[in-house]
Length: 132
Length: 185
Image (tube, rainbow over all chains, first blue to last red):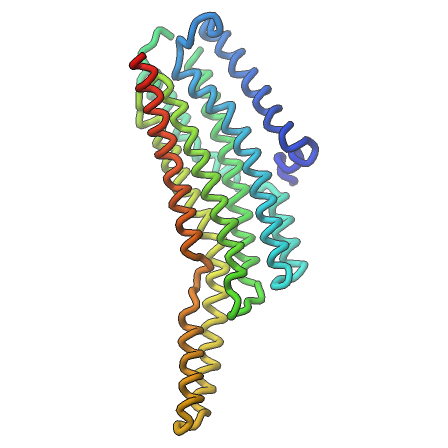
C-alpha cells in the first residue's frame, strides 16, 4: 500500500499540503471548541490550555508533513551520493520502502493508547481549574 | 464535552505521530540493510558520512517536534503528564532513527577493515625482517587502517547533534520567559 503522505505530497504542492492540514484540522478543532465551550472567539483566551493543545494538534501534522518531504529529499540525496558504491536494485529497495506503509504501524499507534487512557482517568487532573 | 474533544485531539495527534514514526523506522531499517551492501572504499570512508547526515536530519526533526510541546503550557502551568509521553517517545525515536541506519554502515566499514587488516598481516609475514624500511612502511599502513573509525561520524556532526538536542530545552525556556513577561505585564 502506498503511503498516504506520499500520495498527498505527490498530488499537492509542498506548501499546499500543510495549509490543507491546517485548514482541515484547525477548522475541526475550532468548531469542536465552539460547540463544547461556547464563545471561544468572543472572549479573550479563556481556555489557554485548550488553545495550546489545539495549536499543537494543528501545527504538529503540518510540521510532520514538511518533515516527511524533507526526509524524502535527504534520503534521495543520500542514494544519489552513494550511487557509485551501490547497485540499482539496492537503491530501488530503499525507494520502494519509502513509498510503503508498514503493516505494523498499528502496533506503533498503540503507543498512544496509554496516553489516551490517561486522558480519561486523569481528565480532572489534566484539565486546569478553569470554568470549563 | 471538552474532555471528549481533548481525547479526540490527542488520539488523532498520536495516530499521525505514530504513523510517521512507523514509516520512518521501517525506512531506516531498509537503509541499514542498504548500507550493509555498500561497496566500501576503505581509504575513502568519509563519503559514507552522508548516511550519518541523513540520520542527523531525523534527530533534528524529532527535536523540532519536541519543541512544540510547550504549546500545552500556554496557561503558564507546567504539568508533567503533558510532557512525559512526548519525552519518552521523542527521545527513544531519535536514538533509534539515528542509530539504525548507521549500524549498517558501521558493519560494512568494520568488516572491510578487519578483512584488510587480516590481508596486511598475512602480507607482513612475507616481508624479510632485514628490510626495515619496507616493514616500517607496512606497519604504518596497518596503523592507518586500524585508526579508521568504524562509525561514519566526525566531530562536526557530533557538534550538530548536540545543537539539535538543545533545541527543545531552549524552546521551553523561551516559552517560560515569554509567559513570565506576559504575567509581569
